[in-house]
Image (cartoon, rainbow, N blue to C red; front, side, top):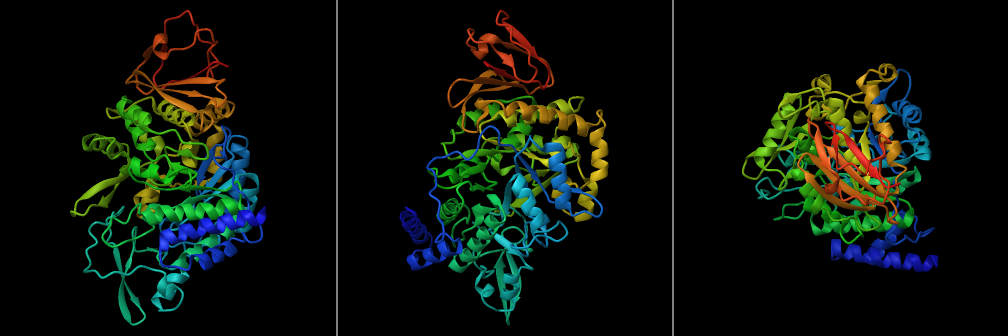
Length: 578
């Protein structure tokens, strides 16, 4: 049976390679990749359309040094915090790039196989991976300018001399989609020549040339190394930009999609519970394409959720969020959405394209600026810059509405996360959302980039002091979010693949229905997304009156004899039949 599985996998890898590279000895190359992954020693047979997740899966996203303590490696401090405050609530930890780097807080990797010694070592990573499902970044599109491969390129040495993409500055690259405003090409001396190297993001981050199969070989070796250290979820960073082809926009190309399928084939045969998540901060329809036919990404980031939910809560109008939710296809078994509303990055605006008008985006960005936020821009091919993302701590982003600040900050903030917890998919909390961290203005000044506003480093003693005071916003938020998490994990109707339908009540009530896979449990999720009380008619919900309904959050039984009930500003109800 083992030989049959391996033979089938070899044929599949050859097919992927033929599509990507065309003229290549696919049989020989497939055997090399299989050997690098040690699949010739043992090879799993993946389960078709198998869900590697349940309603119990909750993730936290964090940097290795989001919490620091004197005389202790930050990864140890993080481990202690997770056990003390989140044990039993979350089971998945995404540690953002923990490798040596030169820029972008880790996303310019100097050494893919080393742990940044300012954070700890591989033993610290191994400890976390034994107690939590560990998610790590495969920073696949680019490496640091200080990476040994690029230093070899500069010195005209193998193999790095062939690992990067060079173009003439006279070539027409105007159709290339850019997420930044910096020049695409980086002038570099290589040996005795002056060359211009492709840099999608910044000149500190040099794009790797996957047109050279040897680059793929090196990345596969890195994947095997990560698996050996307990990493089970691979976040494919900036994957949409991977393949470059002259005369195209160089985003979401067919070869990129095929590369994801190839990596999935290798990874799921090497580790039966390992999964791939694609990080594609792009318009919604393009993002959905990474599900393909259930043979590409296991999970995709639900990138349209953050800007649409933020817009909903600052306008008190859920029409756009509701229309988007109705358009979202249910993920087939074996795939699901990765839901988040805050992360180490800003709130992306490209995923709102076609969903919000330019005027609505302008209201959103202007409001965020009044709450202390910053706007990052991207370059278009007509020399015009367009808002790319909002940089702000989510807690501050929800301190008011488009009309200004008000007294509903915590209630509005908790409501946002209640929506995320109830939607189809796996919910992921950014650690600074769990801690109600505010804008880090000092961080912007220190690091000289906007994203630092939402990458605060808490002093452990100060954080513990704040969490010990019941009246602090940090304690209140963490306590309320943990209560919601605890309730969510007990509901089969909140399985990531459970049925979901959008409900129509009014523009101030964002509502949807979930039903468990066995159809026994139904939950009506109602969210007052406005700053005024809302009356809800029972006839608008269409409850089955023979069932006994109660709110899972408050525990209050619903009086079926009543015709209506009133929801307080930003109140959430999870009405369940058991």
